[in-house]
Image 1: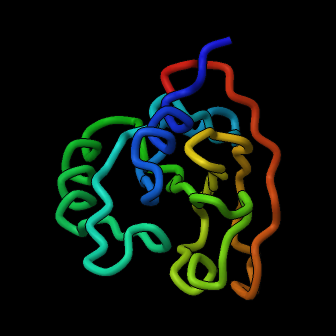
Image 2 (image 1 turned 180 degrees about the vertical axis):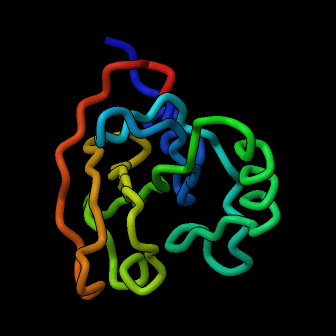
Image 3 (image 1 turned 135 degrees about the vertical axis):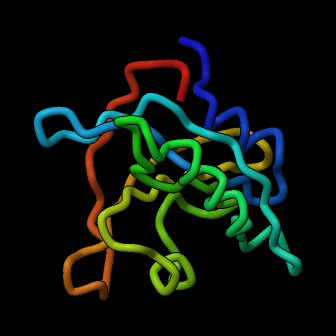
Length: 137
């Protein structure tokens, strides 16, 4: 099986964090991701431990999706040489109702991709099950 786009992005940007958004639609109450859109990590400090997404990229994306049935379902990023678990920084900057995929990249090799959702109390994440069925993500 080929690597998915998120894993390839994480390996390409190692030792820096990669980032992007997860796009798709909700079908019968279930989020269906059909695209992982690569975005640039614009963090001005250490991109090895932090990522930022340019707000203008999100505005352009919002404009692009405006008259479609597709929405932003989540955000992904990598953790170079760290576990595939959200950090305190990730928790402090998370938005409700989105999935957060975290890819562990160890010494340049993707190891584990997990997905998380912010709990309603916004104090912690809960891991959510994911199944990648399309190699487009």
